[in-house]
View 1 (cartoon, chains in turn red, cyan):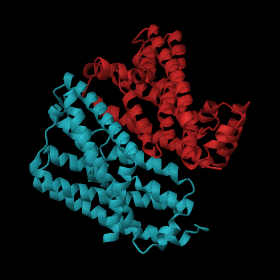
View 2 (cartoon, rainbow over the protein chains, first blue to last red):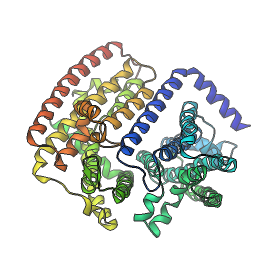
View 3 (tube, rainbow over the protein chains, first blue to last red):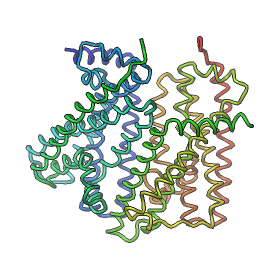
View 4 (tube, rainbow over the protein chains, first blue to last red):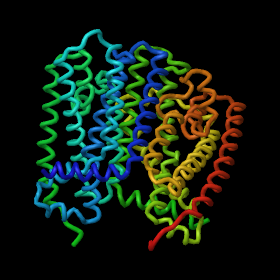
Amino acid sequence: MLFIEGFKISLMRYMVHRTNFILMWVQNLVHIGFTLASMEFIYYYLDDIMGWNKYEMIILISTTQVINAIYRGMIRPNHSRFTHSIKDGTFDFMLLKPVKSIFSMNIGNFDFSSFLGMILPITVIFLYIPKTTSFLVWTNIAMYSVLVFNGALIVSALMFLIYCMSFIFIQVDRLEEIYYTIMSIIEKPREIYAGVLSGIGMVALIPLMVIAGIPTEILLGKTDLSNSVWCIGTAIFLIALSFVNLKAVLNKYQGASS
Amino acid sequence: MNKYFEGIKIQVLSAYQFRFNTVTNLFFWNLNIIAAFMFWMVIFQQNDIVGQYNRQEMLTFILLIKVTSMFAFHMICIQISQLIKEGGLSYHLLLPQNFFLQLYYKTFGSKIVDLFLALILFTLIMPVIGILQGVSIDFSKIGYFIIAIIIGSIISYLIGVIVGILAFFVQEVFSIIWIVLVVINFLSGQFIPLDLFPDRISTIVTLLPFSSFGFFPARILIGGLNTTDILRYFIVYLGWCGILLLFSHWLWKQGLKKYTSVGA
């Protein structure tokens, strides 16, 4: 019920600022345009990168952008709200609400412009898929869709864990940069990291590798469905960790308002 | 002049005060470079040359473009537009100092701290994963590089000022800012080196002001430009400096005529 109310209020707010929606589309168009241009320029000199041809690479990048749109549209506005509220002391009111803290810290506000930004990358995926593979397996498409949302869950849980540092350190504005680093890492094939970062390094990067890489590989038939266990397992682990972590940091929280 | 240098000092102290924020940011700055390095290292496992670049030149380029991007000040547009939109500009207009000079020095101060710490972290992390051996810098051109960085920082700052000033005229300025930032990142060579573009596009793009705070300084230290070329580019970029300065000055005056705020 609260989720629907939050959705309705955000929709009303969004209808007031319709120009934002058009501009967000222009931004997505520019971003996709430059991404495609970059791939064209790089692949002018190359046939493939670790077995990924130009079209497969574009689908991987577009998948990353879909995950980005889900996170930025549904979760990020709430993450920035709670980090700011810790700094200015209004987090006390969030704790007083008759709702589970983890719910109000992650869900409630929507950014429709960002969320609808997924339409363009999805269009690109549909346009480029026929160029990569001669046939599509429906189970793979279904699993891909599930894993894309799962990827957004992993990003959300990771960012939540990172933003929870606001409870300990006052100034965490620049943690925002971590998000862009995560995005730039996940939009590249995981084979790239396998060579250099073997052992511990690779294990540390597993949460990132499964966000967009494995779903895209499943869609393109480059890996089998059993790998989806890694993705779902990672999401469950990180969400559980978020709960435990929140409990621990809330014990340290000292209100600054009222 | 002292009052402006105070701005640099404040930023250094602030970076020290919020150590966690500073160090985390720099750690991820390094991680970003490592990701880019790995991407290109894999490409060079399969190819000896990509465009005009061999492995060593490309890795050096990536490192240098990240360093030069630290002195690209166009992100200042966000701060300026926020001040205009939220009315905080009124306070700055009352101070006995030039608003833009003060902002420039403050930004410069924070970037100096960033660069210093980033390079310390960089030299600690890179040898561990054996990437640094792929980097080769032409130190004979270091003087030109420093001049290019300064010119680039001024041009990027002026672009940031112009985009920020748009907040006087446009309601949805933040969406416009993000569009401009994507364009700037692409045309300054942050995505891929500008000379990997097709010849005709590459010639045009390198003459635009955006390459002055990314591609151009990096290309100097790789050693791909002779002195005549460098001086020719300096003249072009100084021309852009003049144009952008005049335009930003005119736009600022027009914007102030429209500016209203309550309280502050």
